[in-house]
Length: 333
Image 1 (spheres, helix red, strand yellow):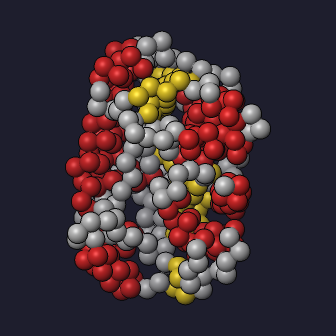
Image 2 (cartoon, one colour):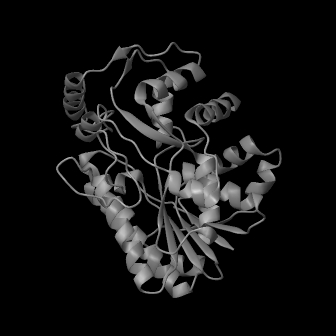
């Protein structure tokens, strides 16, 4: 029996798919009021018997802050995949980011210790990796260094890793994965699907920076192998391809039959953009661009994913394959 938090997210849904394909029994946490139908749609996208696979999932209603629910959910569980997290760069979400990403992780760690699970796989982020900015190459040996450019999200993910290390010190076996931007089928308006949907509608602009992307299928494959093959206490970068935003935007636009963006978005325009969005959302709503995203869109990021490639002998898909998979999913809807 395996337990998955964040099962309706892009990573969690693909982990569930990978586990079901391995014949594992899957139990997943579902927040009250959440819609698990996205998981069924993803399973049907990949498998003719997707609806039947969905019925094999044992959903447990609750959240990361209910100790009794976590205690019940982890009874008889061998492996825990902690995929639940809040991804936000809105400055107003600082407290919620800490609550979900840090306190929530601490609660999962405590429950896993109490239940005596064999191993936990925690989903962190490249945001918690140092050395990857402006000409550097981030890898697992480089610690997170908080500075004035650090987002509340990055800080929360670095602190969540400390909670996992605390659990390890108390006897828990765990590995951590640090994926970059995860591209895969998921709920509209969430995670990378937000970016993909906006670009597929058409844009002439692209920012000057670069980042790394990884296919959600590769993230799930790596996680379900690292849970047994990874070394206790280690973290593993999951990187498919480092590429400029212009290339990524072009791939996404092409997947919708749109022309490639050709106009560089200057830094000053990004600065104006987040200020305008701040004013627009004073009375509610979510900003399309924030001070952090404006400040980092023009910066270069690069990460070295060779550690996990050597260990697992995996070939990670390139961005083109990941984008094509999402396009196929959207076409089927």
